[in-house]
Image (cartoon, rainbow, N blue to C red; front, side):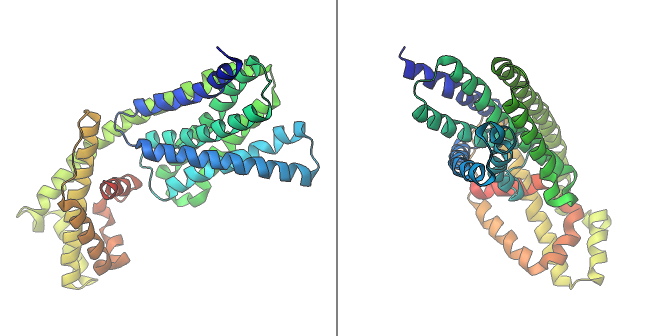
Length: 337
């Protein structure tokens, strides 16, 4: 094997294999390969930007490479890597911890791959030990810190949505701290690489597995609740139910036709979330399903009803819409399909 082939193998293969492993562990196929590859590309672009920004700040602040790599680079690089993951979570393109981990690792993997291309071109004579550290240490570090950022940020977004942008701070601080500690080489570079290689992947995979179990539990309970609600709406028992009583009470605040539109909206919303949950269940079972042609029409109808009932009417319906990010993500999945 040539020296170049060995460097390529050591520098690029570990992070690629771990990314593919995460994709294969995603039994619900929450993240499409095309979307993940797009995130890798964005991560690579972040690396290119970081190289210019690091050079500019190092010169502007008068810091040595030694000092900047320990204190400045972790701040700059983890911020740039985090931006695409933050965008995906805030725009509700991420529904669960599983896909936040994959997107996070993909952004970090893209960053690591672009960085290693630069190092390979700039320092072609470096020995295998350097590339072991870069491939098994630095590259896994970049992907692992972003996977943890995605997991922590998504978890806090689900549990504390009222905190707004502050939910992203703990994950970012953790990523910066891990990166800075690695760059300080508190122990030997090889020992740091081994620690990163063992701790970060095991942590990500453990959270990944736990998240999938909670997703299965949530999916079963959510499916049953939505099925019961849909059956109730279509039955003669609706006027005597708490849903019917609540809708009747809304007549004091909304016109009769608006309340009727609210009921139509509730029915459509429940039916479509049921379809999305069914799609997830089929994916887990290994089946590929086709979304029915009428789904887009119903999504358009829902959009129209959202306008007719207005934001206040939709807010009044929230107790029955299960209006979480997960539900919004499910409807987004139907729109993409």
